Amino acid sequence: MSTEPLWSENLRKVYTVKGAPAVEALAGVSMNVRPGERVALLGRNGAGKTTFLRIASTLLRPTSGSIRVFGYDVDSTPEKARPYIAVVPQEGKPFFHLCPREQVYTYLRARGLSREVAQNRTEEALVRMGLTEVADRLAITLSGGQRQRTMVATVIATEAPLLFLDEPTIGMDPFARREVWASLRDLTAKGSTILLTTHYLDEAEALSHRLYIVEQGRVIVSGTAEDLKRSVGGTVKVSMPNGVGRAEQFRSFGEVVTDGDGLTVIVTPERLREVMDLAERGHITPIVGPVSLEEAFLRVVGRKIDED
Ligand SMILES: Nc1ncnc2c1ncn2[C@@H]1O[C@H](COP(=O)(O)OP(=O)(O)OP(=O)(O)O)[C@@H](O)[C@H]1O
Ligand SMILES: [Mg+2]
Image 1 (cartoon, rainbow, N blue to C red):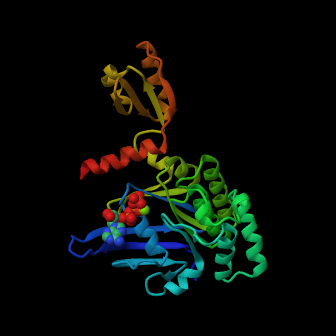
Image 2 (cartoon, rainbow, N blue to C red; image 1 turned 120 degrees about the horizontal axis):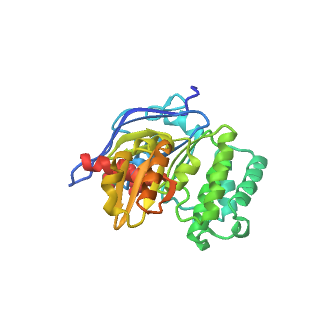
Image 3 (cartoon, helix red, strand yellow; image 1 turned 30 degrees about the vertical axis):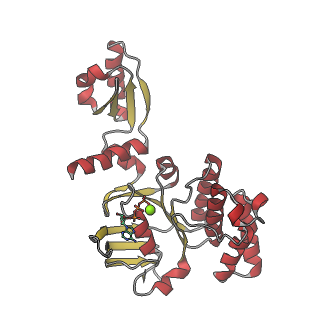
């Protein structure tokens, strides 16, 4: 066993569909996730995120390339990789004829945990995910968010060394999302490693040490959220309502974005003073704030779409 939780090189997946053109969902993805890391896989709908996670979790075979989980080749020896991983699949649902308590417990027992450990972990996960009141109700009677909480509870209770979570907090309220974040942080503190996808970029930012952005089956960016923001020209944005007419004056400071009558300049913290001075001289009162990961994502992916 190697200590590297996940490693892939030039991973490709081509779906062949009868009577339709083949789809190249992954066009050579290389990535690695280090022990104890929480890594977010981001990208537009159809970018290839779920395909990657399905291959990594042995549910789908790659067309070519290599992928290993703790040193085990996922394609040729899936049975070696499986004990290390647990998965929250995209749009997964708990078994409709089980209650959350039964679902979590049964899954842990099926993974080979003792009665006592399974029982303790089940109760812990139910409390953690706020499911105690509905723990003995059939899944079919639960709300959408409660079902999703059950899926996440099941997987966090495994404390598996490598967790794959495909949009784990979809449909959850803001409190539940934060509970998931805290649980995932605790798991990595105990030594687990996490790869997750999400369309909530505040979540990616709050949770991940590093991120990969995929677009049309290729990694277009990897690094920290800070790296990504810097790549769009800065981490601070200065918004000027009604400033659109002054775009030229601010262009030399950084990227300038117009939105209706408004003008936004993205700058590095070092140049903020100059921009503020210039705005003040023009009798504009700017609003200063951090560049969000979502804004950086829109720029970077937008740029890539324009190039293509
Ligand atoms: N079983 C399949 N057969 C054919 N094409 C597929 C299949 N599954 C996915 N695809 C295609 O492969 C591409 C990647 O899909 P994938 O589900 O990996 O995207 P995703 O990044 O997870 O998107 P989303 O954010 O919408 O979940 C898409 O073009 C999709 O239509
Ligand atoms: Mg998906």
